[in-house]
Length: 121
Image 1 (cartoon, rainbow, N blue to C red):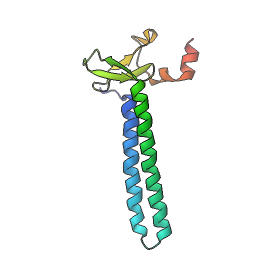
Image 2 (cartoon, one colour):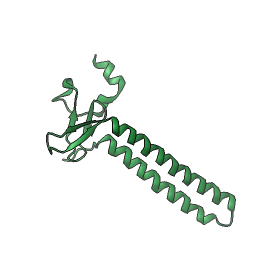
Image 3 (cartoon, helix red, strand yellow):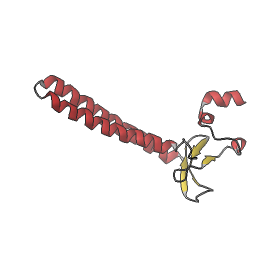
Image 4 (cartoon, rainbow, N blue to C red):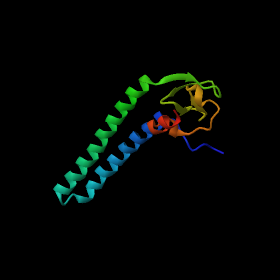
């Protein structure tokens, strides 16, 4: 049974890639309104905003990625980056944690939320 979770860095990169494609689709939709230049311009501007927002997201995840902790996965022995208290291996989707209190517990992304941390203490 495959786990439904994935690495946080990969999720954010996939979101930014989806924004690029959505931006291009929005801009191409503007071609259907060649007869009305104002509507066509609105579609092109919305598509460009999507592309610019994608660039911002890529820049942000790049900054986060430089501060992420690099560990070797015990399952596949490849280096992977961890964001937060719990994360998945980028390669084999093995649950990873650096928190000794969470070792051996069932993987749950809620361990990264502030409200969950305050309830446990």
